[in-house]
Length: 159
Image 1 (tube, rainbow, N blue to C red):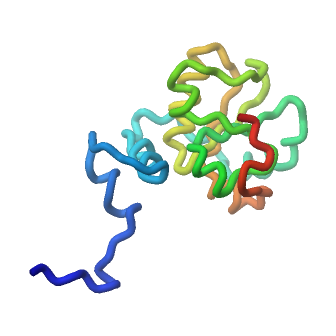
Image 2: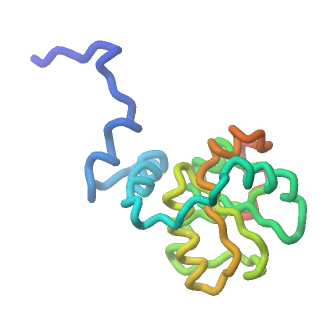
């Protein structure tokens, strides 16, 4: 019989799992997020220059009617933690199916996910639909690192 791995030999799902098995079927939202976030970096729209500075400005201006913070992660990720005041519009659940958010196409839309990959995909879809002022602010971790307020659960959920 094979010997069970010792604790220090265990690898987390973020190191192994769906991201290492292209084309594999994944069952959980967390694994789906891992799989989606592994798309080639060449598919990404660039993350804004001076990311930290831009996020700090967005945090100050997020109450403005001309600024929308858009979270394109899964429901599970959204419920775990999201930017306070953000609009939730999941990439897989809505955008990839052609269901677009009811947002003025000319306001500033700052899009984030977990790593920036899904944000880039969402930006491409929204650009093709005529949205004009989209910026990839990469991740919820970047938002938190820059002092962005967050909430958990479905508080503020627009979907």
